[in-house]
Image 1 (cartoon, rainbow, N blue to C red):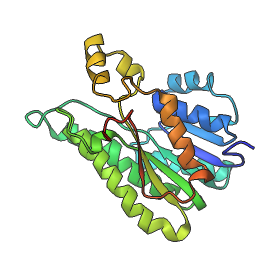
Image 2 (spheres, rainbow, N blue to C red):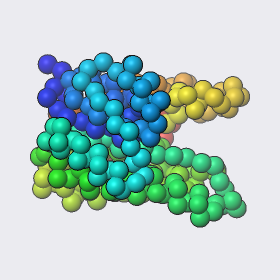
Image 3 (tube, one colour):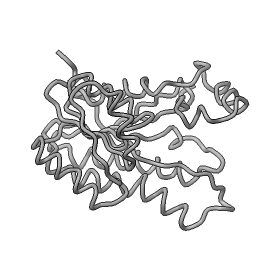
Image 4 (cartoon, helix red, strand yellow):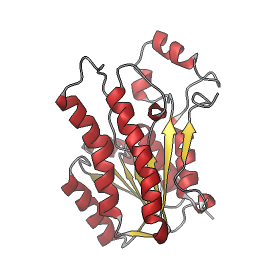
Length: 243
């Protein structure tokens, strides 16, 4: 039996990179999967690679009204929700000398505010025993020059996971975080060879991770195999933050 058979899943930011790998894996493991993006071309491209019962949803998850619309669609089409993955986020370089209000508000708006209201909108649909997986970053525990606001936003997400675990435990809803390290996505592939080599040299496993390896961790937390894991953070980083 597939690991997510008969489960209903939503992947916010699920049409490219790590999010796409998660959507692909969920659908292949039997979940009825909805995946979102702001861009039609991303949804179309993703749809050509996902096999299984998967449905695209065009939505801007930075807007609270759009989050409500997503969950209304799930209510109408499926009536319940077993797995919610909150992956949408952004990063932008700015040192303390350069941080402006727009930079701060954009990053915290998408990386912190949006997950809060995404979960809130999903609460009426989440079944007892449901799993919520927040896609964080190892930036929540290490300092990276120029990415202070981004790092703080991911640390906030990690903190929310702890609080929400307490607040939702009576309903049996599990909240966990998957924190990727350097992953070989399109953005990383666009970096110079010098930058890629420098990053790889810091990783104990001496290579970057693959989006599919992050998806494997998310699948574990989404499945019943992780039924006694709550409030945790799994780092998928080749040992970078651990040794």
